[in-house]
Length: 311
Image (spheres, rainbow, N blue to C red):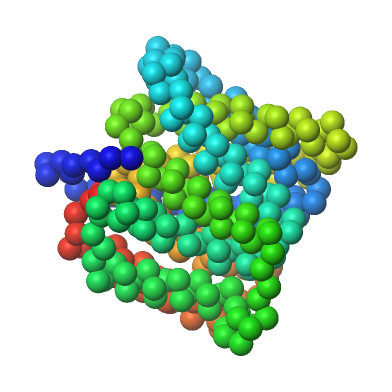
């Protein structure tokens, strides 16, 4: 991935850009509502396959409308098209669902949030990106907020954390999502209209997930067989997939991968609010402390003073 120059005439982000920026973690966090309990009810790669097959079907009209541009992109950049599907939908889809059968949600939350750190690290290594002191401090503060939430305000819980192969699976997904975010800035990808591009990526994800999903079906993997299962899948398709990835890809286009990745820090506090509102869970004092730290870190990391979209 080569470094790209920033257009000095690039317009400042519009209110709509900021709205989509903050909606991305909201839609990603909707997995809490629609995905609660789906792990263990449907085989992991089957879940991911149905998720992206459904997304591809819904968004197909946009792909068909731009079919000439879509076909040209797939023919000229087949490797990029498939790699994006493997990274964003395969590893960050079926692989994550599989890992969640082996590790705890707390471990997964803490580990997956490091994806925003990997984005900046990879840009520093391969694109010569400079990291400001305020940005670094903001990331540290925000990550501390995530840790407060995950550890429930008890730092001694660090002594009892246990890691297994599922945790390494989540770590692999965090790195994959960082690579996915950077690859979205490739000139050929950026040249594609957003909705057709997302349809192509959904199709790519469907194709790469088909073999492991078929293997699960042939070996007795669990399939959706209740109204509840299909309702959860529909919610994941509409909100945690279509809406979330569209908003995130828009944030990458407008703000750059690093700043878009910072939204991942908002997922734990937003998930807490959703759990309280929709699932009747109790709001705790450590939740408040974690939210304050995350928001403070986010403000530090995204404060004016560095160019939007800088790489």
